[in-house]
Structures are given as structure tokens and as C-alpha cells.
Length: 312
Image (cartoon, one colour):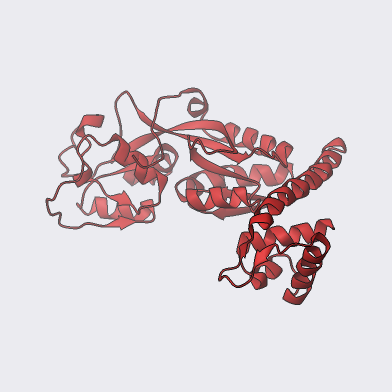
């Protein structure tokens, strides 16, 4: 049994397809299949049910794959210990980031991180929460920046900052003359929302005092990005809510439409998330520190009313 065979075993489980697993491991499919077969012959068991599409681990295969992940993770930990002892942080670091954080946060830290750690290849993937959690468990990501708390088994959440929600209210809106708005004034029938699957959408629905009714709206649109919602809002199709960092990055001509929400301010908690294996922990700690230094200091200190990113 070799470490390479265990890595191939994990790849097939992750992709549930021999060809895609081989591609992920940068080998040919015959090479990967031969090594899996050799492992099965050595152990005297079938690890995968090849009659299923996609292929699935057998009962004993699931148990051995779980142990294989531990062995491979521990081998990676040895490399990390050696690197850290030499003060050498290098190699790829795969970071997942949810879309509603990516556009406003990544540009703030990426140059500082690259300048401090030029030998680390930061690979950023913009993904939704459920996909990130799946890839973290499969060790396809080293860490992620997400809205929390998620309270997922085997997952560690390290809060970095707390980001208030801001209201974007255009002219001629019923709330346009207000200097601030309250939670009780939020009406989901009057809000332009992100698509289902975005945790920011879930948070908004969790704070709305007035939920959707059967009343018809002139337009019922859900978008995958804030820019579309802002444009439609300015055309008179409703208001929307934005995260603080996105709101302060808006052009000056749009800043006049941004209004705070009164106490208790709805806030989302943004965390560095990783598995309990805690691989590449030194890089995770360094990146966390840089992020906390590039966001406004008050966001790292003020913990307002944290709204759950999970659907109610």
C-alpha cells in the first residue's frame, strides 16, 4: 500500500468517476485504475462498486477511504511542520470564498498577502456555501471565507469581522426621506433579492418582519449579483440590502442612496473556515491576520446583532 494509491482512492471517491479522478491526479485513467486494482488485490476487498453510475464505494471501501484521508492529511502535516520550522511558507493554497464576500474583500487583501508570501500560490475559488463545505470535507479546499455560524460537524469557524447590512433606497421610494430605517420597516415584498442559494438572501429573509404575500409586483426578479439589484433599484423597482464593504465601495453618486439600519443592526459574521484536520494552519493564521488588518477596524470590534446565514 502506497501513499499514491491512497491519494488515487480519495480522488475516485471525491469525483465518483475514474476518468475525472485521473485528470485531477494528473495521470492517465489506466494508470489510476491499475493502482486501485492493485490496492484491492493487496487488501483482498472491492473498494468500489463499478456497476453503479456514478461509481460508489462499497461498505468496506467507505471505511478505508475515511482512514485514507487521515493518513494523507497526516503526511501533509509532516510537510507543513518542516516548512514552518524553516520559516518557509510556500506551495498552493486553495481558498473558497462565497460570492457576496469575494468582490468586496478579495481586492483588499490579495496584494498584501502576495507581497508578504510570494512563494504561496493563492488559488481563489468563488463558490456557494454548500459547495464550499463539500469541498472542505473532501480536502479540495484548504480554507474558506464564509458567513457564519454554520455549526457544521468537523468544521472550525474563526470569526474575522462583523459586517452590518446597509439599505440601498432610491429616490421616490416610500423610505427615501428617512435618514435611517428600522427592521420593522423591511418588507420582503419591496426588496430585490439575490437568487436562492446565496446565504445573504437567507439572512435578509431572517430579519424581514413582513414576509412575501400574494400581491403582484411590477417585476419579480432575483439576481446572482448586487450590481443588477442596484441598477433595478435605481430604476424604481424596489430597494435592496447590501453588505457594508460593498456599500462603501459604491461610486460617490450612489452613496446618497445608502442608509444605515437602526439598532439592533443586522450584521453578518465573516469567518475563516477550515476542517479539524487544521492543515496549513500557519498560512490560515497569516491570511486571517492580513484580512483583519485591511477591513475597517470597527468591523473587527463591533459585534452587532448577528443574523444566521441559514434558511429559517
